[in-house]
Length: 362
Image 1 (cartoon, rainbow, N blue to C red):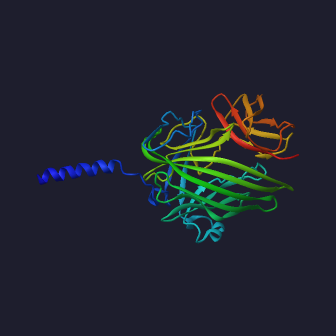
Image 2: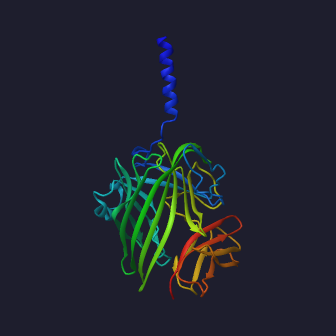
Image 3: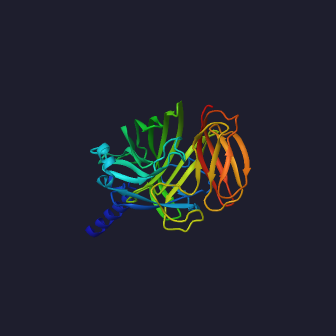
């Protein structure tokens, strides 16, 4: 009888454990010395942000890798001394990356791989700043308050928010004053299927509201943007096993980035694996320009004709055209375009590429 009773207890324990709530904790985040192979997909997918819940199953097994990178994390004391002074005591982890300056960096101000700076603690994982390298000059950007990426433990239906401000000053060029508010909600748990594997995950939905006050070459302008990050997190995986970023277009969330953990795959649009968050296949510049100016487009490899579409933030198509050529293409921005942020869709014989551009007042 005692043996039967013990057996019953064991069965009940196992049954309870199988339904135990998944929890993501600091040990599931990246650590110094970690590297992760990540693929970016240009797949056209039907993504329903509302398709989530408890014990949900997401199937993204059909995603195809268009490029890959190696996401590399290092100890804080391994970064160049120029950045150590600014982030000492505020960061304990750095990510090799190519931080993106909002809408002002073009070929006149080339950037080199820099760093994202994080603080990982028992109760949160936060970005505390970024480090740019512009024309060989280190540009540290320390956030006034941390941008809290996650608060621990992450559990189903957990909510939190954070607010930060920071200034990016580029000597002799201009500056950007940024205000950023993040609203996090763990809105799903269950099974995620990707081309790499099947994972038990939590889905974190992050609504990001950003306002950039830009002073650039004597021009002052305020740009507001709203985006959403969906990240699927699994135990001991370090970085999201899947991330989809979206932008609101005609009341629909349209994916602008699809990225997932992966194994090595030979891709059609890369010549090698990049280190950091560098999307080096397409070169499109400048990111900020006036009506009537020319946008330079350099596709990867020898490409022929390009189909181009410019979409406003309200979803309206403001331009559709075709450009012939090979290595370099020029697109003249129509004089009738009003100031604002637009999505540029470029389609060649193999893929569609999307990038934001900003039009300033003439």
